[in-house]
Image (cartoon, rainbow over all chains, first blue to last red; front, side, top):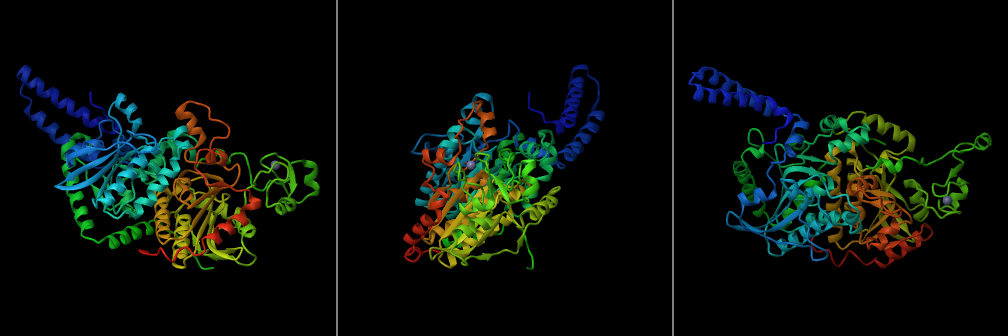
Amino acid sequence: MKHVLDFERPVIDLREKISELKKLTEEKDIDLAEEISTLEERLEKLEHDVYTNLKPWDRVQMARHPERPTTLDYVNHLFDGFLEMYGDRHFGDDPAIIGGIAKFEGAPVTVIGHQRGKHTKENIYRNFGMPHPEGYRKALRLMKQAEKFGRPVITFIDTKGAYPGKAAEERGQSEAIARNLMEMAGLDVPVICVVIGEGGSGGALGIGIGDKILMLENATYSVISPEGAASILWKDAAYAKQAAESMKITSYDLEQLNIIDELIPEIMGGAHKEIENQAEILKPYLRSSLEELSAMDNEQRLEKRYEKYKNIGAYAAIEI
Amino acid sequence: MFRDMFGKKKRYNSVPSKKSRKNVPEGLMQKCPGCKKIFYRKELNRNLFVCPHCDYHVNLTAYERIEQLSDAGSFEEWDENLETTNILGFPEYEEKLEKDKDKTDLKEAIVTGKLTIGDAPAAVAVMDSRFRMGSMGAVVGEKIARAVERARKESLPFIIFTASGGARMQEGVVSLMQMGKTAIALERHSRAGLLFISVMTHPTTGGVTASFASLGDYNFAEPRALIGFAGRRIIEQTIREKLPKDFQTSEFLLEHGQLDRIIHRHELKSILGNVLDMHRTGGESNETRA
Ligand SMILES: [Zn+2]
């Protein structure tokens, strides 16, 4: 049974009804062609209405969809010969972040991304895609390696956040994330970050500073989960829906706030419907970003990166 | 961002007992959050707001900090005209800002500028946790980034005193991006061979700890400050385990190798002056790409 989200229930119901009618046509030899075609028209319209009017909270559900493509899905469809590299060289390997080398359309790149699982066992192994400091330090090690060999870095962002655990604090979760922000700021190669699912707070940003920030249509990027915000602001996690609206966490919001550079459309009904096609949609965006960034010299690219972050935010300058 | 830790205390406690309230004007006395003893503010002030009884380091306002550290008359404030706007149109945000402005006489949770410590010049940013829990919105990020950039242009060291609950929820992802904005400014400052000292004070948590607070060439902290990434309650819920009492204190961090030193407030000025003095020549030889 496929996982169904609340807001798409009418679509699913109608689709089931159509397939029932089709079955009836075959089994009982009744001609229902007219009814079926009317319903199919209605379905098309309904799908369009439902999926093109997603509310922020609907997109949160989409971004968290258990079947939503993960970093490894995109890696398999977009790159050739991905060779995963493990470990931070200090403490251990963190399966919540993966990384390695691969080719994108013939050219070597370093690929890094949060990795969550699609079922319970895998999720436990991946710690639900919530990294420890080792994950960020592994990512940094691979980024510095990319810099040494002059190949671009592509990161995939998909995490609820950095893991809030005792060991993580003891081993310097804050420092690991902070260090990555600063190192990524100065990395001498093109850096492209793609938000594919949940962009949860500092844990997302820890592999998220780059020249280009791309974001899938139904991905979210937020300073705190809507539930977290609701329980702090309204003392009740049930206000999550409201918090999702107020916090401006969708790709459309981030485009308007000038935080992302490209909004990548998703397949009708969400990226999980056709993973391979979704990867194909993403591909030209990666290609053109890489071409644009590779054409710049390092100085120029770093200057643009600096300007990009300098310009995020708004304030009033008053007379005093 | 972690409101629970701000629950109990109020910065300027007026007199608690009814008897003394009659005689002593409000604000003349202050209770130590450590041992709950009541002191004359004057007495505390003379001791740099360190409790004479239990050595607790009482939170300072931004201007109190600057006054304690800077050579008399050396402080010059920067960008004091920047004010916060309600970027996301977040409900009830303006009202909350107005309330804190009235309460603190500040425009935002940070004061930046230039000062000298023992004749050594430095750019400085001081956070003030009374304003929106010292959380980092666009103006806090902007003022830090500007101060760091100006420090780089004037070849000055940069010192920050952090005191923050983390991100500012009402500014959502814009608040989050200030982590990137401040880090990218500090990267340039660092690449120019310039000195950055971070002094973490109570409390320093969330996105502030996971960005500039942890990026000093030297990361210092005041004693017994709360410093951490995730909130204690969230961690306890996640790992289903009670955390030790000293978890996420300066002392805990030092023990786990996350700090260069813990510095008593009585020694802060002289140590900072010393460190600045030892780096006076920095910033000229390494300026290759800035
Ligand atoms: Zn005391």
